[in-house]
Length: 133
Image (cartoon, rainbow, N blue to C red; front, side, top):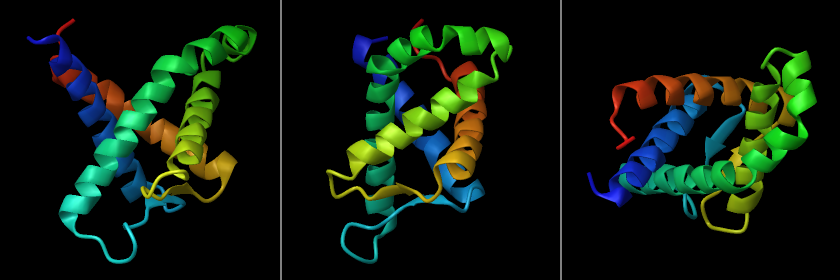
């Protein structure tokens, strides 16, 4: 497989996971690019959000995980959901500077529920799809 293929698969997995989270959790979603949006715009928006989320996970998440290591140990790994919720919140913050309009209404409940959905969907899709590793 080409080196870029694994990266594109990860972006697609992130996009699908975030899309399913918007279907399950009522407090998160995307807004159209200036009004009503069609399916093509929604797909591109979810792919862009998946790209941003992947970059946030690649750059910021390792630092946060290292700093939060004692909390991971004390909570037996459950703190990972809060870290993933924070990564979704950072993704929302970054997307505010673009016309993507990804939103999370309430940090704690909506972001944590979305993080749980995104974690499990990503885990299942990463087991099913080859990524070149």
